[in-house]
Image (cartoon, rainbow, N blue to C red; front, side, top):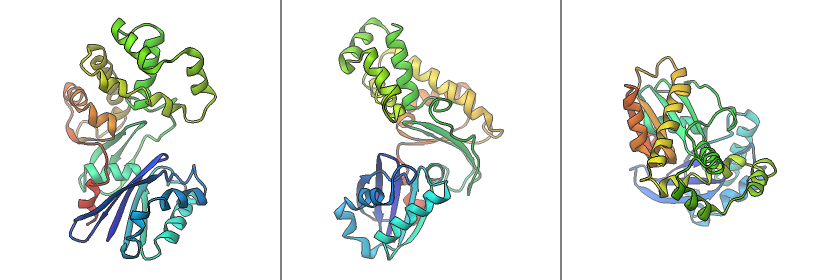
Length: 279
């Protein structure tokens, strides 16, 4: 059997399949970013799912895609933990960007983007990530991500740029005040996650012209500032992976069409899509 995982800092999605591509089980465990957690925490975050471990003796290969694995020391740490827990399996660890590429483009070249809590992109030649602008954190990057949209919502709320009814609904739903926002952004860890927590407001109030205009503005900025940095972006399909791209697919495709670009595959999560690649 083969175990495939999509690992982030807060959670990891697993799917267990047999050699006939039949899904044996789907599981969720804690985050597995090796640059964030020590070996003990990584082990605990995996081992908390007893049902998954009932199959451990029969798992022969593990393909884990995650964040924080580009650093060699972090990669070695995670591989050591996985090998200790699944001693019968051959361990393969790759970046989350390669997961997005394989799940959307398969073995064909394309421009691949991740658009969830954060955002990132790369040129994929059908086999490897050849070129990526590089991720330099939410302060410089992350256009059109959950935290980018959250930041715009907060700015428009405090500067009173939201329509009056939406302003009242935002105030009622989040009960925010300047002191709370300042504390979350400048005193607590992971301010990007805090900013992204406001993004669901867009889905809830999707019919609003204000929300649709905000989505168009964000996607347009992502394409014109980030994707245009790749020489091949006009000739290759643009693939997307992540909750923001998936939920607001209509507006994303509208912007792609406006620029005369080639739409590719848009998915929410790469795990099940990777079954076809590995089995």
